[in-house]
Image 1 (tube, rainbow, N blue to C red):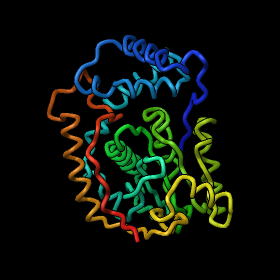
Image 2 (cartoon, rainbow, N blue to C red):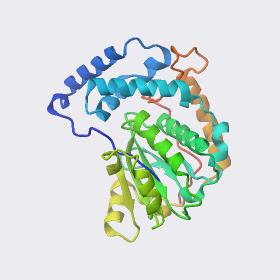
Image 3 (tube, rainbow, N blue to C red):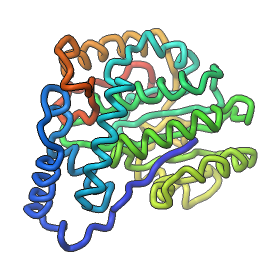
Image 4 (cartoon, rainbow, N blue to C red):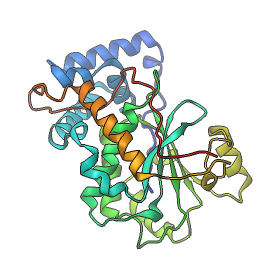
Length: 298
C-alpha cells in the first residue's frame, strides 16, 4: 500500500524551544483570522503545531496548508461520513482499526490489500478517510499519531486497489492529515507489488517515503524492527506475532455505529457549521477509551 513520512522533522534552532514554538502557533492562529464553531475546535494548538512541523515551521506555507485543508474538509465533510455509507467497503476486513496499540501507545490501523472487494476508487478513498477519522477519534490521551500495518497475504495486482485510489489516499494523507502517521509496515510484499509501488511512490514526498518500512518475515532485521514497535503477544501472526487475527464485520459495524454517535457529539453535527467550513479533523480531545471488538487475540 502507501504510507507516509512526516515533513520538516528537522527543526531549526528557532523552533527547538517550546516557548518559541508557542509564538509560531499564535502567529499562525492570528494569520488565519477569525474562526468559529467547528473550525475553531479543529484549529487548536496541537493541530496548528502539526501543520507548522509539516512545513518546517514556515508560517506562510503552514497557513496555506491549513487553509487548503479547511477548504477540502468543507467540501468533503469527512467527519460527517457515517459507517453505513462505507460499510460495504469493509465487509472483507480489508481495512479496520485494531484492538491493540503499538509500544508507544499509538492506535493501529490494519489493511489487507489482498482482500480488496470493490472497484470504485472514490468509495475506496472515502472508506479510508472514514477510518482515519475514526482512528484519530480513538487516540489515547496525549497521543497524536497512528501506526499502520499492511498484510500482503493473498495480494495480486487484480485484487489491489487502483493506482487512482492510492494516489487519492496519498494526497489526502499528505495534505490534510499532516504528522498523523508515525510509521507504516508493509509485511511480506510480493515481487509483483514492485510494479504497483513504482507507480505510486512517484506521488510520495521524498521524506514521506521514509516512514514506509518493507518487512520480511525471513529477515532478522525486519523481525527485530517489528519487536521494537509491537508486543509480540498482541501482534497478529500475519505480522510475525503470536495473536490470532480475525475480523467480524457485524461486531465491527456495531462499534462503528457507536463511534458515529461519539463523532456527532464531538463535532456537534446538528449545529450550524462555521462559515462554509463544514467540519474538520484533528481530534485533540480526551476521547473515551474505546477498543475495537472486531479483532480477537489469542
